[in-house]
Figure 1 (cartoon, rainbow, N blue to C red):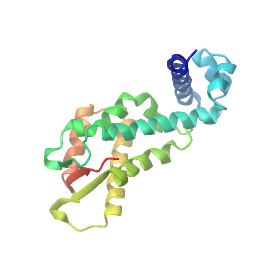
Figure 2: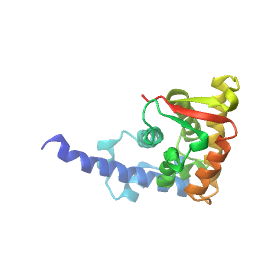
Figure 3: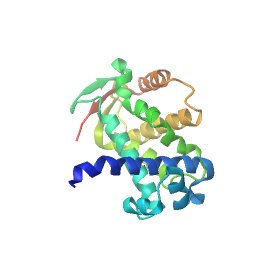
Figure 4: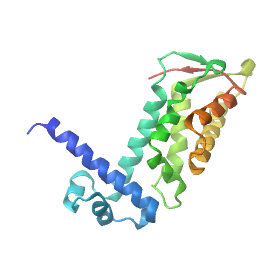
Length: 198
């Protein structure tokens, strides 16, 4: 049997195990979840689990890495390398990251849990900062000279704070309303954004 015919089923199994872990963390907290809980919830047996993952920690790490990788890919999607966008002309598609978070809200709601996926509260904002540092250059309003490393940190963590507020508030604003608020705020200190690309 060739590798390709195994792959979709293998991926489906891994997805079911990840979804089971997300549900269980929301119900009882990460540290209370056992491999037995995960396989019972996903309706698999333990041997199936161990074909894919060494333990619960490896499943958790795989889940976190794949979701944050998806976040990085979502940010890049609307842009061509070298493309410059003026904040006065920003539009909702430029914020594909918001659509991605909303689409994957079942996962991102894990930030609401005290006993959550290890590393989530650190790595989620750090991923946004990494995207700003590696993928974009910014021009300030009136080309105001600033420490650009500080500027990117200030902007990335401010953006994360707003995202966190949107998630913890249960996504009260629609994606469109939330993006409009972000665009209005961006115009107060960013003149243009240039996507560097890979």
